Length: 225
Image (tube, rainbow, N blue to C red; front, side, top):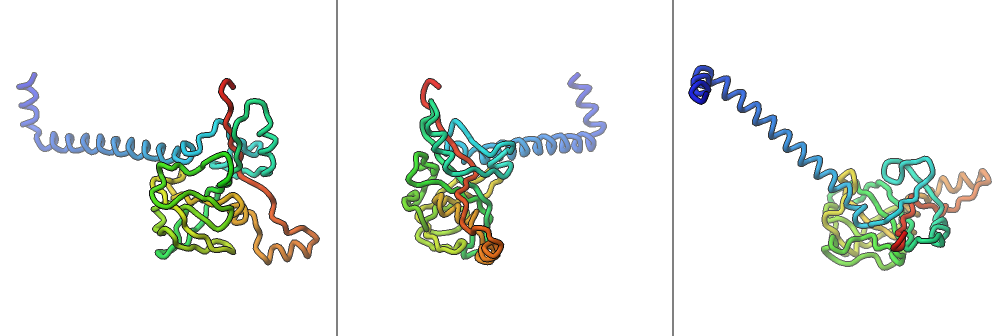
């Protein structure tokens, strides 16, 4: 059989080489696609693994907060907190935005959480410089992919934010870098209308107050539940 195979290869050597190259390229493409897929899965789980909740509470009949828009009242977390078996509760916001940097705007996903709350949303193992959020306003932690440096100031919305921490390996499910803001600042950026909208709403007899909304509420349960 071996001799027959050798003779066949010698008879059609060019076809054998071309076929071998084709099979090799096909296997290479398959391995590359497997690697890309596994990388996407790992990236998609970064934020979820950092938060590590047992429960995700989102708006009814939505696939939020990542696949579909979801809005809940912030005070719903207090109703969830008193349920039997619930341990820790936190409200979160997620939003896509263009972050201004010295090298141009960078598409990021902003995560809003209460820095004084029960969930430490920022994984300390990913924090390579600075610290996590401590204040309720005007601080931000950014991914090193944004190109921002520690202590740098960034204009977002109507306010100026100071970079107090830098993380590595923090990306959204779509591969965009993550930045972290306090819940109050994130709510302001996501839900506060511009001045012209507030003015026209008041002319229509509508209140221009910012709604106390969040995108989801996360919770952990006690042992035994």
